[in-house]
Figure 1 (tube, one colour):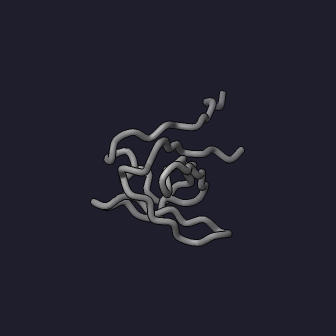
Figure 2 (spheres, one colour; figure 1 turned 60 degrees about the horizontal axis):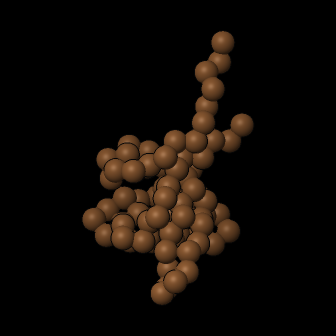
Length: 76
């Protein structure tokens, strides 16, 4: 029997590091009162924040303070 795969929330930095290179969905803050959502590969994890590689828009750097929620995405 195949186990069910589901999206996994990411909370701690070690989780981001563990899943570097995997596809993620990130909700983030930008500007004064705006939020955005990006889906792509978690390309880098560092002291300032994370970098997402989106095939359409390229690399997006997001500071830790601006990450509102993130999760691994599952493609079936």
